[in-house]
Amino acid sequence: MNKWKNRLLEEGTLSEFKTYDELYLLRFLRARKFDIEKSNLMFTDFMKWRTENNVDDIEVLLFYDLNKKCLFFFCLNYNFII
Image (cartoon, rainbow, N blue to C red):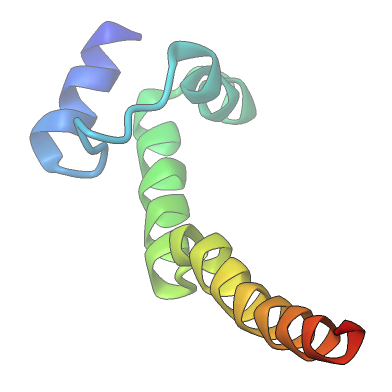
C-alpha cells in the first residue's frame, strides 16, 4: 500500500494537500484484485474524470448560487415585514 501511495505521489496523481487515506485507496486495489498496475490506471482515470467534470468545485459553485438566491429572498422578505 505504501509503495503504491508513494508512486502516486511521485507521479503527481495524488496530491499532498488532498490526501486520500489508505482505506480509500484500498477500494481501488480491491476492485482490481490487488493488481497495482490496474489499480493505478483506475485511480488515474478517476482523478482525470474528477478534474474534467470539476467535481471538487461543484460544492463551491452550488453554495455560491444558493447563497445569492437566499440573500435575495431574505432581503425581499425583510423589507416587506417592516
